Image (cartoon, rainbow, N blue to C red; front, side, top):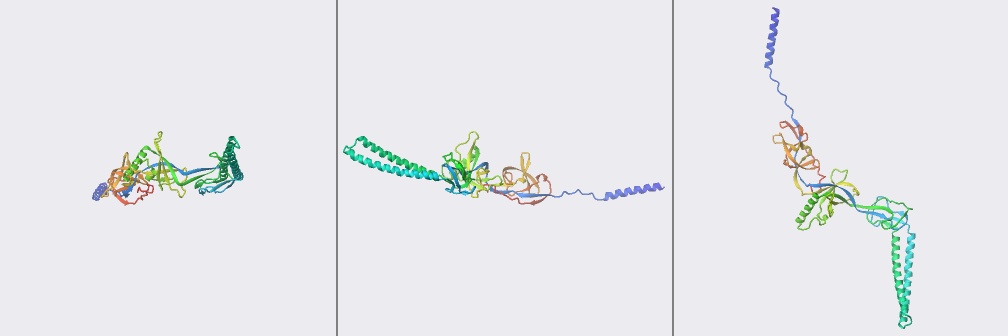
Length: 400
């Protein structure tokens, strides 16, 4: 009896539990939190296309200062590494021997003048004597020759005097140009040897302001520049060609040093080599830059940008807003319904942290900035629009 009652109680408990469970509401599915993303607006900016090359700086003038006469260095008159002006005194060579030689040459001129005077007197007497046939024709001609010889010796003495004056002048070694001087390669008390091209090297001077930059470009670049200059000629109503003085076209360029991220040094192209190298298919160009602060040194490695188009309006987005899917480039556009949509685009060149979009996007379009892989077409988004600085310092002047 007790066993039956226990079974009845258990059965009733189960029925009650099942009934209560059936009365409870179903548990709702969890809702995914909105995905936090940052967006930017596609920008519209006036830009200019450019070519980029590598090159080397070269001083406008470089001079080796050499001894013109032989002698001992008496004194050095400059400080190593300083700027010197044209005709500044740099070295003194002991002048004693050259002063004596010059005095001797001057004395020889006086001697020759005296001989010329004596020869003239003898010739005058000989002329009066030959008129009365007191001397022979031969004696008369000897007097004429003596005068001619004396006059020639006077001219020779004057030339010797000029040479000795130059030798004396060359004992003062002066700067042939204005520029920055190197260290002295010889010290006082040492002997130097003179000569044209073979004289002892004393120091060097370079003129660094302005500064040249030489770089090689390919045939395609040459053709672009030729078309640019031809267009400029047509606009100016002239019929010249690119062989016209390149400097007159004022094609701008910008230069970047090895430790710089932008191109802060403006310059202009001023020289185009007259033929293309058949082996390399390249031609040498030269740019000229102001260098008043003496930052640029001869022989530096630099990068050069040359604009190759007129300014035009372009659509740009940050590089971080562009995704890659095999050969396709895309951005994720946020529509008016705040839903993400993938949009294929075609890319132009990079400008700093931004990229030109040549096709597929309009300015002012809102696009996802970074984390594109996390965005799904049906995702709920929590959007925060941000501003990404447009740092275009690296662009050529007039390209913005």
